[in-house]
Every structure is written in C-alpha cells, then in structure tokens.
Amino acid sequence: MYKNKKVGVIGIIITIIILVIIVSASNMNNGKVSFLENCLNGIVMPIQTGFTYLKNKINKNDVYFKNMETLQNENEELKNKNSDLEKSLRELEIIKAENATLKEYMNLKEKYVDYNTIPAYIVNKDIHNFSNTLVINVGTKDGIKKNMTVIADQGLVGHIVEVSEHTAKVQTILNMSNAVSSTISTSRESVTVMGTLHGNNSLLKATDIPTDATLLVGDAVETSGLGGIYEKGIHIGTIKEVYATKNITDRYAIIEPAVNFRNLESVLVIQK
Image (cartoon, rainbow, N blue to C red):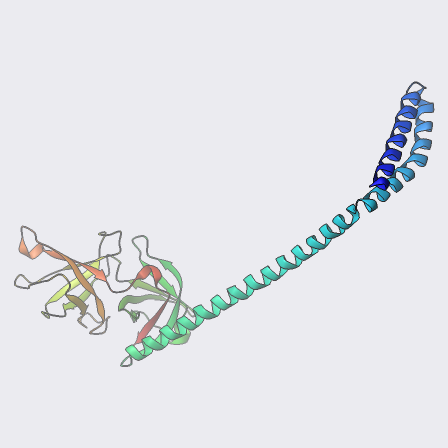
C-alpha cells in the first residue's frame, strides 16, 4: 500500500513539472517552442512510459491485459470449432436427406413392383401458376419418352411432356388442360379429372359424372387406363365435396390429390 502511494506521488510531481515547462514554453516564439518541445518529448516520454509500466506492474494491470489476450485467443479457437461443428452438422443433414430419398425410392419400387420404373429427383418445380410443371433429372439417356406416366409414393403425379438428353418436363394433374380418365373406386363409375382454380390450384375437379351415379365424400378416385397415357389403377385422390347444379349433367366434385406437390422431391417414371 505504501509503495503504491509513493509511486502515485512521484507521478503527480512529474506531471506538474511537465505542465509548468509547457506553459512557460508557450510564451516563447514558435521556433523555440518547437525545438524545446522536441527536446522535452525526447526526455520526458521515456520516463513517463517507464512510470506507466511500473505502475501497471505494481497494480497487476499487465496480468489483466495478458488475460484479455488469452481470452481473445480462446474465443477465436471456440469460433473455429463452432464453425467446424456447423459444417459437420450440415454434412450429416445432407447424408440424412439422401438416405431418406433412397428409402423412399426403395418403398416406391416395392409398392409398384408390377411396373418397370425409373427413379428421378425433382430439380425444378413450378406449381404456383397455370403451368403446374416439374422438371426431373432423367432424360432420353435414361430411356425417358413423352407421355410416360409419373407417380409418387402417394399416387399419380402427371406425365412427361418434354424430354432432353438429361432432363424431362412433367405436366402434373393439377394442370387445367390435363384431363385424366378416371374411375370411382367404390361405384366403378367413370369420370374425368382435371385441374381447377379451386383451392389455389391445389385441388382437382371431377366432371362428366353419369346422371345415375352416386358420389360420396371420401370415395377414392383412380386412373381408368383409358386415353393411352396413364396406366390403370393408380390412385389420384379422394372426393372432398360434391356440387349439385340445376342441370344434373353439369354437376361436379372436388377431389383432394393424394400427392402433396409442395413437398414432393422424388418420383418414378413408368416405362411402357
């Protein structure tokens, strides 16, 4: 304690001497002031630096700064480790997604064992407007041709409309111009299913319903195999609502597709 006070008093005395010298020098002309200032700086600064170092040493401030430097280095190391962990986590997520896709392929293959199919990834998706199309990562080099049926685990997706060497475009059943000849699974009545603006383009519409046919909410709808494009017996969806009209020949039903097109990532193309 006594040593700290002694150092503090010495520092105050030196500071006062410096101030007195500077004030005195300020009354001299500029040329002399500059010369005198340079001399004073050369003499005083080393002394002041020495006392500052000595004071920090006594008060253990140098330990504080060393600790700060150590903490900064440790923080930088932790940041690097955290970055490495995040990278590893992303790699694990990618592997997990790839495994899930492979498992989905296996399930699809087992479910549609009666068909000769080609698995594919969806590389582009446009289901928010009237086109309702998908682009998949297989093409002519894989044996893909126009009008081949495209399916997913839940049911019918659509058919091939354009093919290049490495990719193919799929027109989904949500497209309003894509008419699918279909059958009500319970009554075996024939209907035509196509896209509709109902439900933000996410639902289907069944028309050409026979006048004596009875349609019930919850009935399943599947492909009939007629029309030359879609294979027979592929699940399309279920009847959500039935709408009566003044003219019974104009009545229609709204169908909820079995396939969740927003989350769809992989499909199978049926080779005829």
